[in-house]
Amino acid sequence: MKLLVATDGSKNSLRGVRHAIALLKKLAEPGSITLISVHDDTALRHARRFVGKQAVDEYLRELSDADLADARKLLDKAGVKHDNIIRTGHVATEIANAADKGKYDMIVLGSKGRSALKDLLIGSVAKRVIEIARTSVLLVR
Image (cartoon, rainbow, N blue to C red; front, side, top):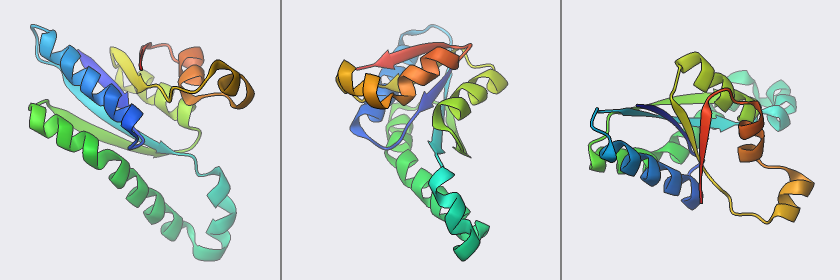
């Protein structure tokens, strides 16, 4: 089984990583996990004019590396084969597109645990991924 696990470095996303590890351990066939870190660069597009594209790209790369660090440690400790994808853009769209392009069996997302009212007002990445992805999505609470 080939899993795409989104992580932003939060406790909730690490819960998703742990669940993906447990899922793979239950399977007879070995599987793999690809971690994906996506940062929305919309707010930084204006900054590119002043500090340059390379500085913004390096900053976002550093953020993604930090987001992925704990998840990588969990996967290494569990002995699970893994790699990672780093992207910028609209978070939900990039996750769904990566899942399609990589032909993953499932997307695993950790839930932020917000109330239904807050999600209704401000939306959620998980909700949007579920709406647009053609790949099955597992939301971990």
